[in-house]
Amino acid sequence: MNTGSRPLIDKIIELALEEDLGPGDLTTWAIIDPSIKGKARLLAKEEIVLAGIEIFAKVLSRLDPEIAVECNFHDGDVVAKGKDIGVVKGSIRGILSGERTALNFLQHLSGIATLTRRYVEKTDPSKVRVIDTRKTTPGLRILEKHAVRVGGGFNHRFGLFDGVLIKDNHIAAVGSISKAVAKIRATVPHTLRIEVEVDDIKGLKQALEAGADAILLDNMSVKEMKEAVTIAGARVLLEASGGITLESIEEISQTGVNLISVGAITHSARSVDISLEVIQRT
Image (cartoon, rainbow, N blue to C red; front, side, top):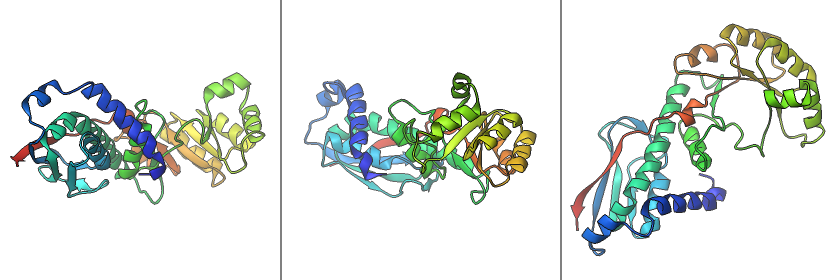
């Protein structure tokens, strides 16, 4: 994970712990003496693509710097059902107080990576990229986009500040695709690619005439996508988007588009089943 993002990740972890732990863990702190140490087993209860193990460890170390997570796998690895992801060693009080928050991150991010991998495996990565969207959990985008990369996908723009995408409402507000592209072209650096969203072949042709660098084909049929590829040739990047599913992505990937954006890999990924079980008291 990018080291420049550490302060933001630390802030996310702090907020998550504050939400769950608050002023203290009433149950654990009453039952478990702070001197008690031990080990806990981190177990994959289904096959997963691991993502977020560094975040898992950081949550626990925030509660007690002496807690150590010894991992058998790394982010991006496939972990079979029943395999130990690793062992957590240290203060039992710290481990139990941070267990839920740490697992929430690990299960959620691994769920995104696992689902992303399923989408990628239905395509030929040498010909088309599966990319994410901005349809992420508020506050967790940096982590969720990391999980997409771990799963074999690629990131679209991170936010509104690092990429240009002229959408239908922009076009409606300014009056036409050509006006929107011209205004952007006069404003942003020449190094930025200008992408335009269209929902029919007429819009595609207008975007090409306006000089778009990339065109998003929104909710087009497979037939329309193939036609768009023929018309555009290799002049621009073409992105298929809108309602992409595991059942439809393989056929879409064969139309000749360059990118397939899938909102579901972040907004609809199921948290995978991972458990943390205390196995030894020392």
